[in-house]
Image (cartoon, rainbow, N blue to C red; front, side, top):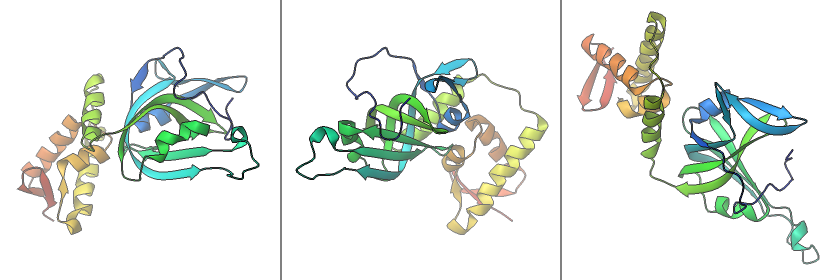
Length: 224
């Protein structure tokens, strides 16, 4: 089991590669950590055994601990640690690196949109990721990924209650944004945990009912 101050395998270590599942952070956090004598094995997520994940998210926080630089301290004993907190609108997850592996994390700044591939870990009740691949990408890929994941899921028939709850949530987002001059449909799609198709259906209903209007394509405002 890897503790906060232990050093996991480096980025370059060759190991058996598990499938890197494309997931949103909210889905990752729903997984159940399966352990064996204190050692993390995998996340149980439905019928999947998830060890590696592929996510797209924004960096919202960064911490770097360079360790002691005193000349009498051997390099092997310098404690180096870095963590990033990333958010994709469905949840937040920490990335952690130790020793020389902190270098890629040092290049990241708050606000960067990242593609991250890495191994899940659990320590003291907290899920986190040890990144293998960490690269900056265009923010628009967040929406692309959500669409990709939603389209890959099996269509589930929605109940009337679910439709009503979704409609109310979409309506509330539009109301709350009125002081900002409205809200983009893409923003609602990113913030609301429902398929883009379902959200667009509810937006269309609200437009038809005259509860909202579209001052320009893709921009929604509340009529009151």
